[in-house]
Amino acid sequence: MKNKDKGRKWIWWFLGALVALQIYFVQELVAALALFALAFAAIAIVITGLYLLQRSWAAAVVRVANSRHPAIAAVRQGVNAMEDVARRPFRRPGSEAAR
Image: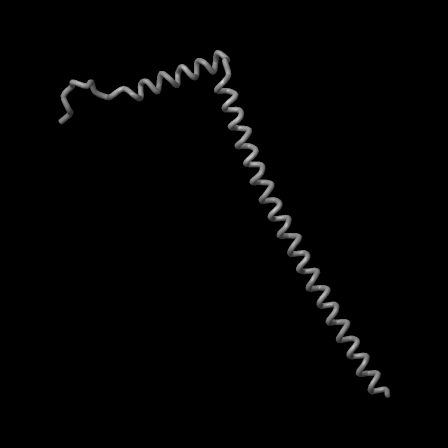
């Protein structure tokens, strides 16, 4: 009878160790899931922040472009003048080609 109790004792220890290992494995999986969720949330926050910065920048550019402020008008006039200079040819239409 004593030998039988000793065998049961080892079986219970083995089952307890098996359950403990299963709980540890599940805890590790949950911890990995939490870390990946945090990483993906951080990436999503960064992408959302960049998207919002781009949208606010575009709105600010449109607002400045529609502004009637004298400084903006002067900049716009300068840009238009530079575009006119860029459109002009380097040589006059009837001039001789370079050799």
